Image 1 (tube, rainbow, N blue to C red):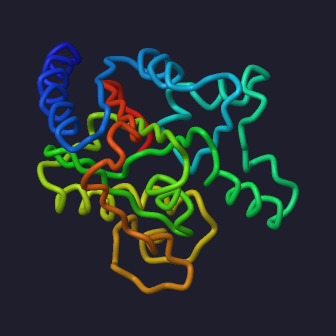
Image 2: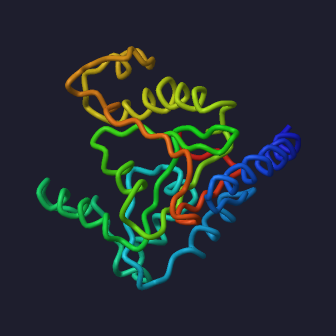
Length: 213
């Protein structure tokens, strides 16, 4: 069964990569997690200042373990912050990073990226600031249209993400989006990246193995 899924992934990825490129993105397909990690590392120099938002896909391919090693001394790891104030300062520093690592809650077949954020730091850095943005996403993030990609982000990614936090929201309780206005909502900033400007700033790596949520 996995063999047939691989064949399908390769065919779909070829079309989506072409659509990304038509929109100014740099894009490629990696069949395995290891290939995805090596491709991401090819965009990063050891002396780069590197930041990242919440990105479980990058964690799943092993990229974060690499970036937290001594080889990358300028990585900004907000998880090491000793106070909320220090964490906020580190998150702001990511806007002047050389490289920012992000993910995708949804991707449309015509090459648009959809994300939802609680605080907006991730979508803001993906939009402007760092010279290079690397997006790693598995093929299950791809939906037919940008509307379908948004639906995936709201109905699948966000309710799963909510389970990580000690919050009191409908999706935390039921696993389903209720389009709530809860003060603890993690769905506050919605982003659709329709084109990449300047051309090539955002590098999209589609992976054939399941990553993140």
